[in-house]
Length: 500
Image (cartoon, rainbow, N blue to C red; front, side):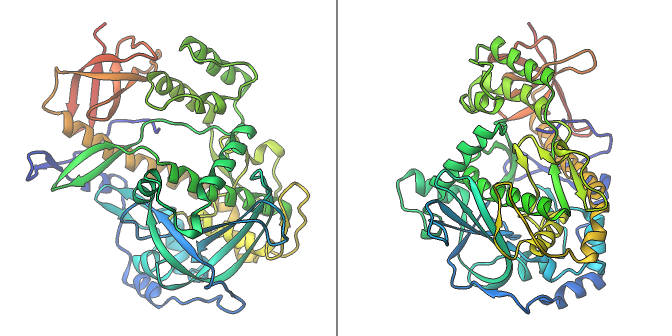
């Protein structure tokens, strides 16, 4: 969960048809200089773009693939299929993960590439997104649309029967998506015992074993409340959108691909990684002490991720301990490396949250770096590559890709900060508008983050779902009543106090 901060620029509201205030996010767009439109020249370049790498693309259109995305998504990056067994006849699983081949339409050094480097990633606001690429590309030409032939970067990843990655290859392919699925509908079908579509009938099994392997590695997955702002029947509503099992299981397909990409790039000596340093011993010990103080069983042999996974997400203790656990996941970044600029040490390549080397590889329509990761992986991964630490690869990264890598960490770090701030400011505005007439009232809440000498505590108010600062010594791991003392839509600021 991102830190929340008040902004000084004004945001206006108008009365909506259902009595709730409508929200105007134009001030957020202005504050962060977000431009949804592209120049006519770039729109024309996008409209005229064609598959410049069609030659040598394998034909995988007979492979039954499906997409799984939030309802209403148009920028469809991934399509999936999971099979039992491997091509060599071994027990285990084979994951086919088709990724939109943005690199086939956006050449390094082209005007479209230059614009993408300025934008960094798609920025999402409640009333629409600010895309990384013109919509004719991101939502049509490269999007993995159901019933259409599309160029893709096709990963084929094999595991043993315990879900441990064994080998992978990645090739350019032509694919044909059979069905478009969304998380809520798919989860509802699963909960009611309905059969899943054949391409993903093994998703619960595969996702489950990958989840187990992640916990064994020491991966840390936070279960903090996720706020969402949705437009329903003419008015805006703040909601909690719990992560479905389908979402979590599908995420492990993406994580497996990112781990495979990282291992291939490291074997080749060139690439771009997503990194997160290991927490120091003092931080881990503070986490264990907090767990014990909350009455949570936290043995010295249990990894933090295992402790968190043992808690029910709606327990106030889980809320408090997950907030403490954010300190375990500080310092994320990106690392570009090459034979002339290798990683400083093994720890520099690690992602502590995933508990592995990891690269963002599966969302090139939405994130700039993923396109370059795909190109590096394609250079090294056309043939089967072992993923057990004995990988040997051949191939050469195109010069225009290798030359671009050193600039990407700074670009991606900056765009990530902006994207997070934009999301936070939109939620801040909605919180202030939702509560502006309730100053002085009390609400049920739980401690999210304890205060210190420089900052007030942060609480999570259950209804409406609001996260805000709170004065006073709020106890951890308990349901409390807090009083609203400020809700200002102009400054997008909400504050509570704990009247102990």
